[in-house]
Image (cartoon, rainbow, N blue to C red; front, side, top):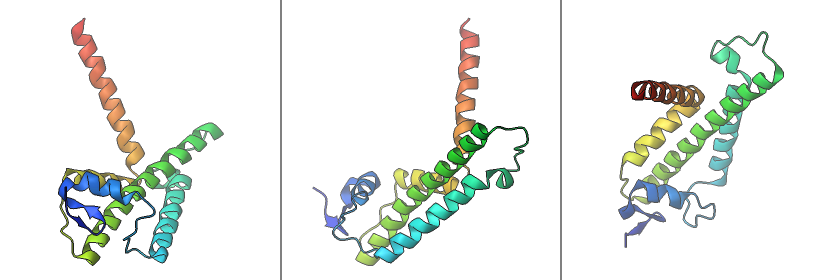
Length: 149
Protein backbone atom coordinates (compact mmCIF):
# COMPACT_ATOMS: atom_id res chain seq x y z
CA UNK A 1 0.00 0.00 0.00
CA UNK A 2 1.06 3.61 -0.49
CA UNK A 3 2.14 5.91 2.27
CA UNK A 4 -0.51 8.22 3.68
CA UNK A 5 0.60 11.83 3.89
CA UNK A 6 -1.74 14.81 3.97
CA UNK A 7 -4.62 12.31 4.03
CA UNK A 8 -3.84 11.39 0.41
CA UNK A 9 -2.21 8.25 -0.96
CA UNK A 10 0.57 9.56 -3.20
CA UNK A 11 1.96 6.21 -4.29
CA UNK A 12 -1.14 5.62 -6.40
CA UNK A 13 -0.72 8.79 -8.48
CA UNK A 14 -2.69 11.94 -9.05
CA UNK A 15 -5.95 10.27 -10.14
CA UNK A 16 -6.18 8.59 -6.74
CA UNK A 17 -5.28 11.88 -5.06
CA UNK A 18 -8.23 13.62 -6.72
CA UNK A 19 -10.60 10.79 -5.75
CA UNK A 20 -9.52 11.20 -2.13
CA UNK A 21 -10.08 14.97 -2.25
CA UNK A 22 -13.72 14.50 -3.23
CA UNK A 23 -14.71 13.48 0.28
CA UNK A 24 -16.10 16.52 2.04
CA UNK A 25 -15.43 14.99 5.44
CA UNK A 26 -11.71 14.97 4.65
CA UNK A 27 -10.43 14.65 8.22
CA UNK A 28 -7.03 16.22 7.60
CA UNK A 29 -8.14 19.07 5.35
CA UNK A 30 -6.06 22.16 6.00
CA UNK A 31 -8.25 24.53 4.01
CA UNK A 32 -10.35 26.72 6.26
CA UNK A 33 -14.06 27.09 5.80
CA UNK A 34 -13.50 30.75 4.89
CA UNK A 35 -11.16 29.81 2.02
CA UNK A 36 -13.67 27.26 0.72
CA UNK A 37 -16.60 29.68 0.95
CA UNK A 38 -14.69 32.53 -0.73
CA UNK A 39 -13.48 30.20 -3.48
CA UNK A 40 -16.96 28.86 -4.25
CA UNK A 41 -18.58 32.31 -4.10
CA UNK A 42 -15.97 33.55 -6.58
CA UNK A 43 -16.52 30.47 -8.76
CA UNK A 44 -20.30 30.92 -8.77
CA UNK A 45 -20.07 34.67 -9.41
CA UNK A 46 -17.69 34.27 -12.34
CA UNK A 47 -19.68 31.34 -13.73
CA UNK A 48 -22.82 33.48 -13.58
CA UNK A 49 -20.88 36.23 -15.34
CA UNK A 50 -19.92 33.87 -18.18
CA UNK A 51 -23.51 32.62 -18.35
CA UNK A 52 -25.13 36.05 -18.38
CA UNK A 53 -22.58 37.99 -20.43
CA UNK A 54 -21.79 35.34 -23.06
CA UNK A 55 -22.91 37.58 -25.93
CA UNK A 56 -20.63 40.46 -24.90
CA UNK A 57 -17.68 38.27 -23.96
CA UNK A 58 -17.71 36.25 -27.17
CA UNK A 59 -19.09 38.99 -29.51
CA UNK A 60 -22.24 37.05 -30.38
CA UNK A 61 -25.35 38.66 -31.81
CA UNK A 62 -28.52 37.82 -29.92
CA UNK A 63 -30.88 39.73 -32.22
CA UNK A 64 -33.56 37.51 -33.67
CA UNK A 65 -32.76 34.71 -31.23
CA UNK A 66 -35.53 33.31 -29.06
CA UNK A 67 -35.59 32.80 -25.33
CA UNK A 68 -34.76 29.08 -25.68
CA UNK A 69 -31.50 29.87 -27.52
CA UNK A 70 -30.56 32.50 -24.92
CA UNK A 71 -31.36 30.12 -22.05
CA UNK A 72 -29.33 27.37 -23.72
CA UNK A 73 -26.36 29.72 -24.19
CA UNK A 74 -26.58 30.84 -20.55
CA UNK A 75 -26.71 27.23 -19.33
CA UNK A 76 -23.90 26.09 -21.62
CA UNK A 77 -21.56 28.93 -20.66
CA UNK A 78 -22.43 28.83 -16.95
CA UNK A 79 -21.79 25.09 -16.70
CA UNK A 80 -18.64 25.29 -18.81
CA UNK A 81 -17.20 27.87 -16.48
CA UNK A 82 -18.31 25.99 -13.36
CA UNK A 83 -16.65 22.79 -14.63
CA UNK A 84 -13.42 24.76 -14.96
CA UNK A 85 -13.71 26.08 -11.42
CA UNK A 86 -14.34 22.57 -10.10
CA UNK A 87 -11.18 21.34 -11.86
CA UNK A 88 -9.27 24.34 -10.49
CA UNK A 89 -10.54 23.56 -6.97
CA UNK A 90 -9.12 20.03 -7.17
CA UNK A 91 -5.74 21.37 -8.30
CA UNK A 92 -5.76 24.17 -5.72
CA UNK A 93 -6.75 21.93 -2.84
CA UNK A 94 -4.22 19.28 -3.78
CA UNK A 95 -1.35 21.77 -3.94
CA UNK A 96 -2.33 23.47 -0.66
CA UNK A 97 -2.69 20.14 1.15
CA UNK A 98 0.82 19.13 0.10
CA UNK A 99 2.40 22.53 0.65
CA UNK A 100 1.13 22.74 4.22
CA UNK A 101 1.75 19.10 5.00
CA UNK A 102 5.22 18.87 3.44
CA UNK A 103 4.17 15.93 1.31
CA UNK A 104 5.66 15.26 -2.11
CA UNK A 105 3.56 16.58 -4.96
CA UNK A 106 3.63 14.15 -7.85
CA UNK A 107 2.80 15.81 -11.14
CA UNK A 108 1.14 13.46 -13.64
CA UNK A 109 -1.02 13.38 -16.75
CA UNK A 110 -4.15 13.74 -14.64
CA UNK A 111 -2.78 17.06 -13.37
CA UNK A 112 -2.11 18.22 -16.94
CA UNK A 113 -5.68 17.32 -17.92
CA UNK A 114 -7.12 19.04 -14.85
CA UNK A 115 -5.03 22.16 -15.51
CA UNK A 116 -6.16 22.24 -19.15
CA UNK A 117 -9.81 21.79 -18.16
CA UNK A 118 -9.49 24.42 -15.41
CA UNK A 119 -7.90 26.93 -17.77
CA UNK A 120 -10.51 26.41 -20.47
CA UNK A 121 -13.34 26.58 -17.93
CA UNK A 122 -12.37 29.68 -15.96
CA UNK A 123 -11.69 31.55 -19.20
CA UNK A 124 -15.07 30.51 -20.62
CA UNK A 125 -13.82 28.29 -23.45
CA UNK A 126 -15.10 24.84 -22.42
CA UNK A 127 -18.28 25.13 -24.55
CA UNK A 128 -16.32 26.39 -27.57
CA UNK A 129 -13.78 23.58 -27.20
CA UNK A 130 -16.38 20.84 -26.74
CA UNK A 131 -18.46 22.05 -29.68
CA UNK A 132 -15.32 22.34 -31.82
CA UNK A 133 -14.21 18.80 -30.91
CA UNK A 134 -17.69 17.41 -31.59
CA UNK A 135 -17.81 19.16 -34.97
CA UNK A 136 -14.35 17.84 -35.80
CA UNK A 137 -15.33 14.27 -34.93
CA UNK A 138 -18.51 14.61 -37.01
CA UNK A 139 -16.54 15.97 -39.97
CA UNK A 140 -13.94 13.19 -39.67
CA UNK A 141 -16.67 10.54 -39.46
CA UNK A 142 -18.34 12.00 -42.55
CA UNK A 143 -15.05 11.85 -44.48
CA UNK A 144 -14.36 8.28 -43.33
CA UNK A 145 -17.90 7.26 -44.28
CA UNK A 146 -17.42 8.90 -47.69
CA UNK A 147 -14.22 6.90 -48.26
CA UNK A 148 -15.98 3.67 -47.37
CA UNK A 149 -18.50 4.04 -50.20
